[in-house]
Length: 231
Image (cartoon, rainbow, N blue to C red; front, side, top):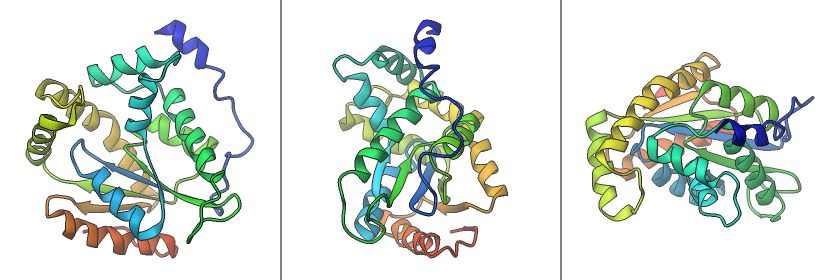
């Protein structure tokens, strides 16, 4: 792994300013334990508000299978073991995807030349990722935090594993992911709570109920009127 990390050390050097201006590009992080329903809610919010939905996990899974990827084996090992992929890889994939979306000349609310809005799902998962992304890519406008019990998460993931084909949707990997989440991601949520940027949403109810609550909160975020809350 050290040899691989040496290759990406130069991917990020200290920047004078983030790649994207937060007044032009709106970034909302979508966090929650594995199985909290982040992806499902993002699909609904894309339809509601025209976001570009970027899943850090999906980008990493695609990269591990991309022909010629120098990071594929590293990503595959991290996912299998329930560990976090080095942040330089994840952040670069996200930045590249954001740049590609802005070049698509999308239409609709929030989109014009060099302007766009993004839901970033499952990221940041560690404090260093959060700090690095805010400093070098774009300062996040808010965080949607989907919370529920570990029992609910386990039931959902085991059910999903019957059809998902994902290597990490098995009980052993799921338990490792729970541990990693508690140890590393909860401090990220607490960090953004101190900045008044977190809206916590109980994801235990039906998809429709959670979506209704999410929609109201995102409307507040886009209007610059988020009041930190638990729904």
